[in-house]
Length: 284
Image (cartoon, rainbow, N blue to C red; front, top):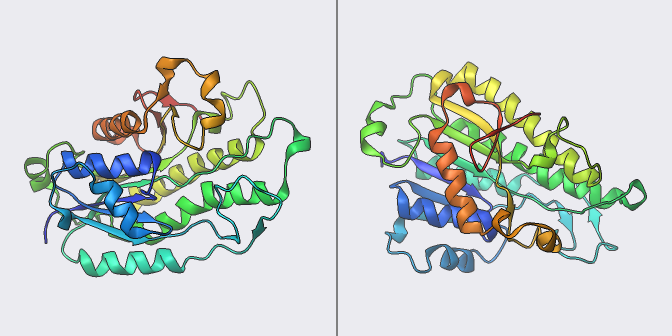
């Protein structure tokens, strides 16, 4: 196998699901999608209505929540308990990919785990919820990057054929971490959302640090960026849909389309920064 591959984690719903679906339909990449559970359902959702070779899709279990006993999407927060993040599912997924894609490289990675607890004042901050937010939104993509960076191209990896062989893709590999505009410290005029803002500011810092590492190891063959998809009509933002202008409330499919377009147009001087769905830089 010589065709490169893409990683979307997680891809069972929302933006991740639509990223997986769009990349399957618009590129020749092999797609590795992840879900915390019910892998068959996630696979069915990704393939539904598409006319693609389903052999290009792998769905693997990855769980970055580290939360017990309830889902991070559960609205009953009084029973949350935290435990150290368990890397075992990430390690297993990375091992599978190492065996599956021995002769090719990871060309696109969208690392998109996220939860939101919108504290409006400091008195609403819950230690367990804040810790869960940081663990999933910040530590989650960091651990994913830790185990999947080795699959990105090295400085010695030959990529020229890719430009002619693969349509709708950047010529260099890109690892994209999901951030948000509220992760910008300089843009923070409203306050609130304390743990979520902090977790996304951390994502921007992580993306920059990973990119510095890639500059050393891959030179112009791979980069890392953070991305802001806009306000997307998913369960994460549902509470706030009524506060968003209709033309600024995006479907997950539109957000996925825009993120892929922005990634495709990134140049090497754009590396290590945070970009929004319009391709505009968000200051740290």
